[in-house]
Image: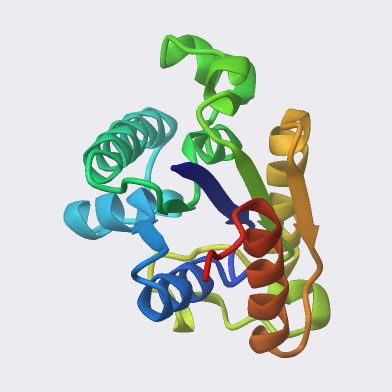
Length: 193
């Protein structure tokens, strides 16, 4: 089993791409859904509506749910790709006091979290090509286009220590991005006929 994270800023296509790949290739891919959206839906809030203490509490819940889902889905994944819609490191980009405080508060390290995953695919936000729909496609999204780009860049830097980090630039067509992600997955775990 390979654990592969698909990450990136808001409107990068993470959920669309991971959902499509898992739906089209169930014999090869098990998808780990994004924990943040689940937590925000459950709490009926979003990041920009919370005070710093609330943001820390929510990020802890997201981290815990992420780890729980990863463990549960890995039990039955066998030799399939475990394709993560975000990974545990993503929370550091949203932690009020920065990444160093995030690791300390969660009693972990960046190195330990990086070691959890075999590869990382970073997707550039659609905002980089002027195609950003804000909260229209995700009601829990609060960022404007420029913030989406900045958040994506921060995530690229946070994941930058991973030895197998693949960068996928924004494109006007999501299908082109999807094709590039498929190529990366094939290079990491070729299909056997």
